[in-house]
Length: 181
Image (cartoon, rainbow, N blue to C red; front, side, top):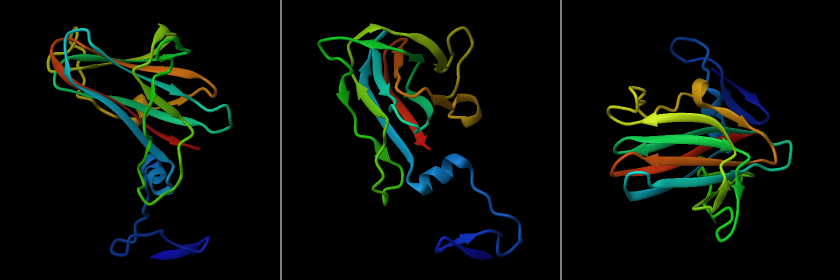
């Protein structure tokens, strides 16, 4: 079954079972054109190498719902810091392209994401995640993106640091997956 809402056909019940059709919020934001993605990778990380991304939230009423993540071929630690301080020579770093997850949408992100910043102070550690086959002190994860566990609503007009640190020779990528409301 469907009904017309704001000039659009909206499915409300499954045609076969008549059960209510629902869609998870994050997935709905993809359909709304308000979900974005940015990543930075390093094909050859050695022990203690880092991939760093700075996320700058807008000074507006837009709320950034972030799910940070990483993909690695070995052990690594992903950390999220708030109130990071950057300095010369790179400042916040090089701006990354924010990919709208609805490729038909012209909506642009308000969150600015950069890579390879010059950090003078990490700020306050807000979240730590461990990746790898054996884990650090037995706390390995599989790179999950469980929204209820890892989603954070970022503070407006604030600078965050997302840092992936290698523990051995690995390939790695760090990413920010977020929606804006």
